Structures are given as structure tokens and as C-alpha cells.
Length: 593
Picture: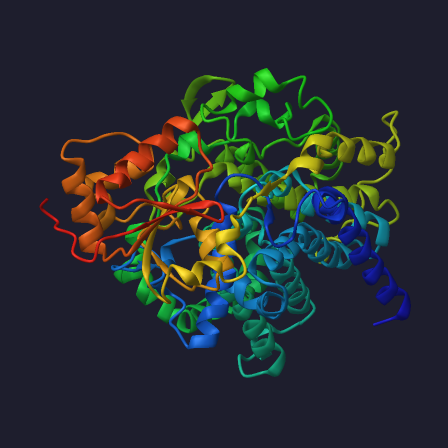
């Protein structure tokens, strides 16, 4: 590697990390948030990943099976293979977790993930364009896209995508090597170069699988679609060259699945049943969202807030991922119009349109109106991919936008089919290419509210700090924490104690059937009275072997009074200690009282 190229690579990495710190780390730098008691993002979902980081650390220290835990939903335990437990990412972050703890490790990794995605996209684009600034620009478009910014508010597993550009980069290099070989019959699987390609691709597949099963399935799905398009656009070249690359890919998948067979086994015997199924139509891109920003965007976010709320009935901003903005849409149109005669660009165009259409889901939505069925509708019953949520397909659309942006800004080369080292040519549309690009990133930029407030302060009670809990809870004792499950931060508290206790609750997906069958569980969630409440409470506590109830009073007065009244049925006076109410469950709970 030349010194100049090395300097460019390091410069790109530094630039992306600096941008990531501006977008995500200001609350921590300004000390509005603490690395150990706050977390990047909102809601409860991030506690799943913090818990996963601590869980993998616990498994390494105690030689435990990482795919099944007895630390939640005790005494039944929980199969993690159907959850969003980011096992692979937690494994890679182990040194950081050992050194600074799970919460701080999560925060640093979450801040860096968009920068890593930008950087790996830069590596891909640097190979394509042979030019620094266009590649730097394209890398930004991918790593700090609407998709990445929105998912950074809650979903680490969906932000763990830095391997996607690297896998494309590896396949592109091998495709070019195959095209330069005159007689492909001379290529053998035993050759070192072929083995290395298959091995590297398999390793990346394994880690992407362990980062996010959803992203792995989406990558496989759209990868297959791209090869179909490539065959349709250039069948002769596909048969002669690309088909051999496809053989390598299949070999890598087989190798990866063999290595992943323990995970797949646990998924088949239990994890699959715990996968949460959402209606694809509820998590699809709204057609207006391609032009209208969400509230997370600086330009027009608040102005269009009333309209963007109609994009889905839940008003989940983190799935309003389709916003590309007028400048970049204009750039895309210009690029394809000028270069559509090139076969590889034609394939890229058809792939881009396919991703966009599929991201719209099974039904076209414009604002709050459902218009008509769409081509994705048959796929909502296809195994594995049926659990994917269409709005998240925009990840792959933004990778295409990044490639197009880099090619558009690279104006001193010709496009070739052998290598996409290309340019959009010289456009005389009244706007300079870089002005159009900077307008594009300005349209995508996050709002000041997003930058300053995309974090959650847990206000962790002192009870869970400095070993105070050990005075009341024995090691590996099963306890019940209120707020319950997805209503509260029980996973965060458990991780903060180093998995000291077990819980008769959890949140890494849906409530398991063996817990939801207890009527009292619904009272825990909804703070509502049910018939025979004392009997149901005793029945639950007896069956689960719960020894202690901890109430963290971080809800309104009515709910607080309900829970104090509910657990007052234990005929035990609660102790208020270091920010929590503590109930000792009587040793002999009569389950039929």
C-alpha cells in the first residue's frame, strides 16, 4: 500500500469518527449524560444490547452457553437465538466491556457504528473510483444516511452493517480477477486465492449473522436479486464469469452455515418461536417519506412534523428510513440518465428500483392512505424473509446512493463494465456537482434536537450500585422487578450488577408463552386489577420461585399506588432503601390462598 493511500484511509477514518462524535457523543462530552448510567438512543430497546454485552462477558467468565440464558424468565430460561441479542458484536467488544463495563462499551460502539459503516463504504468506493474525495463523500452518504441516523435512536443490531460494504468489496475484487482470466477452466477451488476469498467471505457472513439475523437475511435476499438482474442485463457475461463467482458465494454460505450450526440448532428447537412477527405493511416506507423528512432532520423536520406523523400510525420515527431528499434524488436521476447505456449501471438502476419498490412493502401508502397492492406482497409469506420489515430495506438503497454519489463526483474517468471506475460526466445543469452533494447532505443532516437529546438517562437507583443489593438479594436468587419487562429497565439493572441475580421477567423479544399464560403478568404490565388477584400473584411467585420483589418507583402516582397495593397482598411491609421498595416473599407462599 502506498503512503499516500494509507494517509487517505486514516484521514477518512478520522473524519468519520469526528462526525460520529458530533452527531452522537455531545451529550456525553458535555456531561449531560454518563457513559455508565446513560445510553445512546431512546426507549427500552437499547437495554437489550447492554444486557447482551454483559451476558457474553458472563458466558466467557463462567463457560456458559451463549445461546440460552437462565438469567431471565426464570425458572424456564430463554432461547436467545430468536432475539436481537447482538452476540457477535458483543463478542468483538469484549475487551472494551471487560475494561469499562457493558453500558459504557455499548455507548462507545453505538457511537462508532455509523463511522465504521462510512469507513467500509469508503474502502469500497475508493476501489471503484480511485479518488479520495468522491469516496469520502459516498462513504458519508451510507454511514450517516437517514436509515443509520434513525436506527441509531434504538436499534444497535440494525446499525451493525459495516460488513456489508466489505463483503461487496471482496466480491467485486474477485469478480474483476475472474474477468481478467482468459480461461476460467484453469481456476480450481484448491488454489490459495480462491480459498482465501471463500474463507474471508464466510467469516464475514458468520459475524453478520451473529450481529443481526434480519440484516443477514436481507443481504442474502437482495444479493440473490442483484445476481438475477445481472443475468438479465448481461447473460453472456454472467454465464462466463459471474456464475463462477456465484459458486464461490454458495461455498462460503455453506461453510458459514456449518460453523453456525449450533446457533441454527437452538434457533430451530426454540428460538424461532420467540421471533416477534410484525405486519410488514405497518413497517413499510411511505411514498411521501422519500421527499418529506422526519422530525429527526434539521431541514424541514419540524415544519413537516404534522405530515410525517401520518407515515405510520405508530409514529415510529426510527422506521421512517426512506428520506433521500430532493438534491440527492436529482443527482440520482441525472446520473442514470447520462449513463444508462452501460450494462453495469443499468443493472445498478434496476436493483435500486427493486429495493425502493420492495421497501414500500405489500401495500402502497401515501400519507395516511393505503392505495393499492405492490409487488412485495407475495414475499410476506416466504420463510425467514417474511419477518423482515420492508422500510429497513433502505439500507441497500443508500449503499447504491453512496456508489452513485461517488461516481457522480468522480468526473475524470470513463465507466467500464469490468470495473465501475467511472464518472457521471460533466453536467451543465446549473448546479456544480459538489454544491449538489453538499445540498444533499444538508438535507439529510440531523436536527440539533437529535444531536443533543438522542440519549436516555437511566437514573439508576443507588440500590443497584456499590453492591448495596447484596444486602437483600442472594447470588443467583430469582427476583421480580417492577416496572415489568418492556416497561422498565430491569435488563439494565441486571447488567449493572454483573448478572448477580436472576429475574422472573425479561425483554429480548415477545413475552414467552409460559409467562404470558399467567393472568397476573398482564397486571404487572398494565397496572390493572384482575379477578382473584391475590391467588394469581401467589401462584406466579410460587411457580417461578421468586424470593424478592423490587419496585423502582419511576412511574406516576396512580401506578405506584397500584403496585404497592398489589404487593401489599404479601402481608409484608415494604422497606424503602436507596431508591427502591423491597418486598421479601414469604418462604411458604400458599399458591391457592
